[in-house]
Length: 451
Ligand code: C2E
Ligand code: MG
Ligand code: MG
Image 1 (cartoon, rainbow, N blue to C red):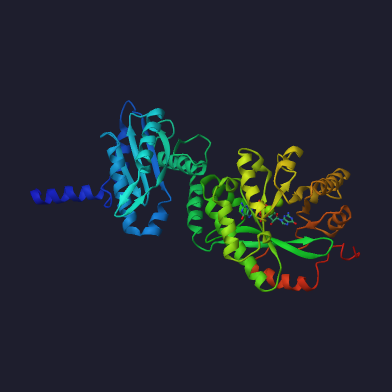
Image 2 (cartoon, rainbow, N blue to C red):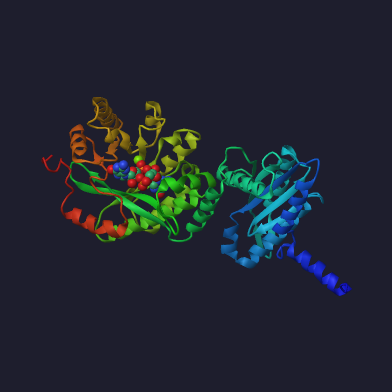
């Protein structure tokens, strides 16, 4: 028995619906998969480009003006983007504020051209009621067949390129061979993105001890990720992901907020401490950083010198002047700056005198070698002198035993950190220790021999 006309119409409508995004009327991911599958079967192969587009700061519109405004914005942008494409191209909404475009017979230059057109469309003001909204987009591009010969690889690589755009503040870019895009890495990236909104990111704090007095000068905040499946992850497991995907800015904001609130809590208990926060190189290029830092300090009624920022020599590469300007701005307001892992990177004496600094932290590799060879002793001794000559204090990191500590004291090193003095630990564990050592100073060899 054949189907009635009505049944046929309903079936066609259902099929259409299953391939259409309800909110925008664009095609959905099912259509995209079908279309790419069809493309892959064509002989001889036909060139194509996969564009993956993600709106920047869309979340702020949603949070600030509500989902209805957010939905209207998506609807309008979808219509504009659709209109900017040829009828043979496919515009798709993948979900949330993520879109894809499949361009047939397009190579590198056509794909970049279309990406530019789409991002211009997105950037034009959208008027909703009495609101004028303006957003921008990041577009990653993967080419078929050069960059991938199945839909998942193409999407994954376009996605990797899209994240690189966000990181580099570009509107669009092509996937580059060598970019990380394996499944584990992408999964961890998505989980990290979600973790920024939970309390899975935790801080451990390690005391910095003033050697001559045995007093705790402050603590360094060190981030860890309490991952629901993988356990407590050290920073080197997830910071590289954050740094290469634009997640480092929100991560730094979280760390600064938690660390400074903890500092406030300690000060309220009578513990006069400063807190040091590590900054990744991209954070120093973030024009919003000084405002963020200063307003947090003010909001928490903390003196500016209660915060120290630890940077690494990597800032000397790339956009040095911009990074220096940011640091200078913070320093003129009283925030202290330390150069971390000194001696492992690209430091030259010329740069050292140009950087706006208060403190040098000699890398633990030199400290741990102390006692082993006279050469390392000479390095440490002369670094203490160099720091003092430049008006900087010297901190030794990675002090693991009493012999090393004693040597550092005789060299005139100002402060030290290390497992021998105190391990990094959560605030709950550290707080009683801090109270105890506010009364009875930390034993530092200098305090023992009555410096
Ligand atoms: P760092 O800033 O040089 O921090 C010192 C590292 O040495 C920490 O490792 C600390 O746990 C470890 N350490 C401390 N005392 C000793 C010791 O006596 N012996 C040895 N062998 N190690 C010691 P961790 O916590 O794994 O952090 C590694 C790096 O990750 C940090 O190096 C810092 O560059 C980065 N990092 C940590 N937290 C953050 C953060 O919130 N933001 C950014 N951007 N980077 C962070
Ligand atoms: Mg550090
Ligand atoms: Mg270090």
